[in-house]
Length: 225
Ligand code: DC
Image (cartoon, rainbow, N blue to C red; front, top):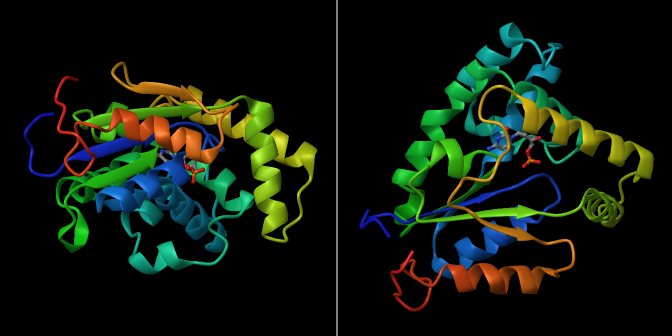
């Protein structure tokens, strides 16, 4: 613990590793504000597509990121695979990442609604956005398991769930997110890495809660990290 007034928990990892579920539950449990940073990139990607632009083009994506509005985050379709692919493309552009940096850091430093702390999930929270986070979790899972989870999610939402397409999109996204030159997907050196392939949601959450013991609101005030 650093003694900073607002504790920060970073949850990073690839798509389908279970970040969102854990991050949301942590925020609810501790009374912290939650920021899904992937939504920012999805909103930029969709904005570019709706404007008829190319998500891989810095000329198209940079102004979309610089002019991102709250209403862009409420758009339908941000959870679609089309938005995910566009997000991964805009996310590889350094100027897009730079445009979204301050918002994410400000959210973490001064969480909205007077929340006592913040939980951010994404790909670079522990490495770039909040390198001083009080707790860093990196969730991972095998590609097969992540694809199966995504297919199940699509089916539950009544959307087309085609195995080869989901597999292809996820492989492409993993490759792009992990190999881009700026803020690639990576576990911070001081992150706790949890492979969720063989764990259900409750088991993952229990493990993370065990690691969060020293965080204000996170149970015992153990301070030995
Ligand atoms: O977490 P998600 O699936 O909603 O993220 C969509 C894409 O956005 C992901 O493929 C890469 C990008 N992203 C990123 O580069 N950095 C983040 N902190 C969050 C998401």
